Length: 304
Image (cartoon, rainbow, N blue to C red; front, side, top):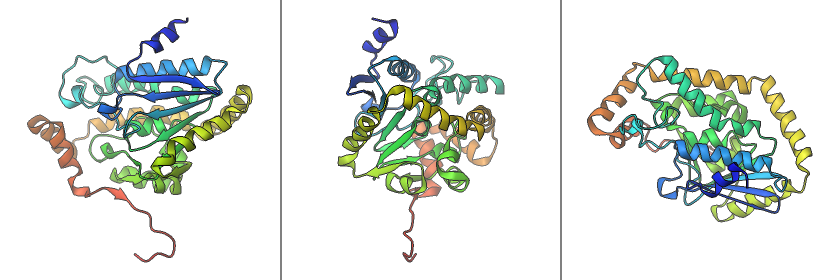
């Protein structure tokens, strides 16, 4: 057994299984809404490498255990006031690490090493998204090749309101410049049904059908030889790169670090609320002016 496979057998933040040419990787912290921390990101990377290496796998299906796909980064690190005990690349730490702008950029780049691997895999990855898919959850989902969502999924990057910009930013390549700006300018969320309408997802399904539909699509893809699938994925991703997709991620990380230095009133208020009242109150005050913060598309011909 390879060291990598031994690692996966001892993993405690995700599940890994292979059947019918499909490797299913399940984020498995349902009690934390599958929030991302350093350990989960590292184990996720190892699982992806294992699936990409195996000859009995043609496609990867990524999902989250419980009610949510992924509610974002685990905010119980220093971002939530827990100090500096976490590793340097811990995404819960990088946003408040004391030091220079370059320190912040370095941390974000190390985080990207763990997430952008999705673009570099030879095998296609299908994301099955239910419940919350927020902030870091969108970093993962939008790095996949296909995104299948529940009609009632909740998708967005609320941290864009006061905390920064997505450090892995592929919104433009899914939904175009106007919708990307609409979502990031407000930090609003959108339902899975409407996300499919604007291109953030390939298709949406009723929640009770989502798992079956996502698995059926993965199995359908798995009928094609891995070598052929790799050529399809790599040629399309090369076209994305010719449009600047991969290079833009380096700038996204650097601009997120710059945004962390903002001295605007809402950013200052968030820091003050954090210091005086803690994370929960800071998030409440940050989001209060936006109401329920939900984008709702109007059907064509439907009156306002």
